[in-house]
Length: 192
Length: 259
Image 1 (cartoon, chains in turn green, purple):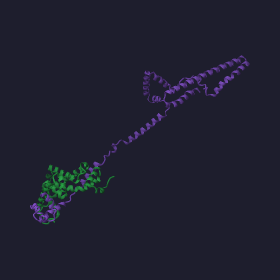
Image 2 (cartoon, rainbow over the protein chains, first blue to last red):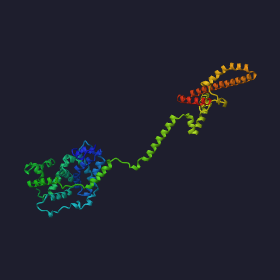
Image 3 (cartoon, rainbow over the protein chains, first blue to last red):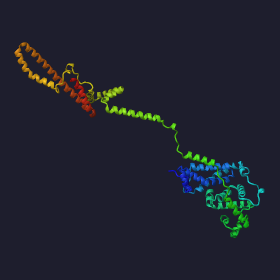
Image 4 (cartoon, one colour):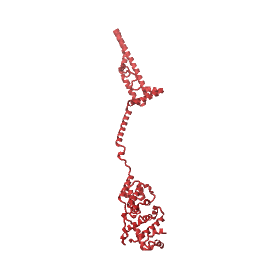
């Protein structure tokens, strides 16, 4: 008997993966609903806001879930697993080093950020976010990834360490560096 | 030390809540309360990042991939085994079965005859092979000789004269005739004595005729007995199944002409 999508809302990520492996479409819909936006945001930030490439990678990611759900060990944490795949996809993209070539100064042209001259002393959240995005793109990959995973996607230090295959101490030191750098660059903003 | 501090520092409410060591660690970019507050806001706002969502087309594409992967492969109707052919074959099989059942179970004929009628070549081959075997084995040849006395062929040819004569054993009139013969003889002799020589001669002739007829009748009896015994012999060789059918029918066939 097929379950409705609503019934899968109570399922854990791991249970959803099991259901997907049995061909349950609503389970896939629920999993997509939970992670598509987060992963898309993560990949987008990692790839200097290149939407086209981010969409390609996201599609690759979910296609892998559809075709090879057995690759996931249900005794492990799904969130860590899916971010690990996303991280590896981004690393492969870095290696190809094509993203920077297709973007304007490392940024997608659709994400042009207001210059500092246009900024007032009082700035709203939107302007700050745009500035943050710009500064994030200036960070190197390993610091940017740690910052995005910790302060944007809300993962724990332990999870980040697992995803990036590094120890927790390294995660913390990278995080310290990223915050220090961003604080220095964004100190002109008066946030409320 | 720096690592541990970063995890906890910005969770504190106020810059003054920090320890001296913590303050010294972040002094480079966070020297006072204002900077501390600024970083805290920055991190909070970073968590509320601009909402981004992948396009709907991406989800549609994934749906298609999912359906292709998990939907069982349906063989097109054209590629399936042709339905008409299957129906035709099944009907043909049923007809053949019915035909064989009727012919095998209700036929009166000998299997050898059936084979000869349906497939003469095979029958000939079978005959040849059996003859070869019989040549090598005399016991088999005798058996086959007995079998070859097929019921359809009359065992003994009965002369046309005798055929018209009724069978004496079960015929009452004939019995009467036999009795009459015994009774009439003295009367006729008496008549002979009374009417003279001519009449005597005529009587003698009629007696001779009757004697001849009785002779023929006895011959017929003998022939009949031979036919019955021959049939018995042939039936003993055959299977028990055919025996009852063939016995009755062949006896009738052979006895009928006598009547």
